[in-house]
Length: 252
Image (tube, rainbow, N blue to C red; front, side, top):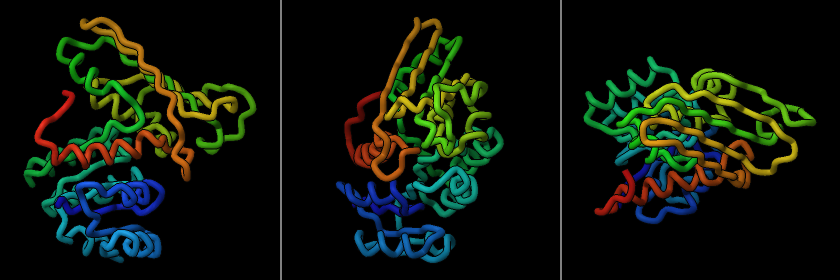
């Protein structure tokens, strides 16, 4: 059975721990050691009070369920320790220099970095479309102001610009833009709207290229204990972990 190290023991970590079908959580690390110990008790894994001890644990791969900061602080070390790395906070990869370092570390260690589909659909299609050439990609995201930490009483455009700039401004809320940019292989234009009338996270993707054009709209239910995260994004990690052991792969 695949042994997983869990980096981050908050809401997403608990969801992963409650669906360990085909894998076991053998090691856990969180800046709050009490959270790691609590989840370790529930999973039968070992909680570590230092990242160095955690990354040396006997696991096959490490799943990040913490933050953009955690990915940038620990990503290279995970790979250098001989572990594959699953990145939930994909916004960390919006910084080109860090992405290059992470790719270099993965190649040197002969390890892989996995990026779940997250809160959107259609990433496979964007990967196919880039072969023929994509002319334009736009992501329009609408969220309730509370999930953005804003007090707004009417629909408001709070950001417009490139995906990497949006990740810097809202690192906990717009990982989707970084995932789309990686799949499309080019800069993505982002519109981030705050709307008190919505109770779901809405992502609209517009892509145009030699393949034709596409429009995808997803209305995600927020994660029960963290409105800043879509429930679909959390579930996508579970599907990725399940499919790693599958002999037949579906999708590009």
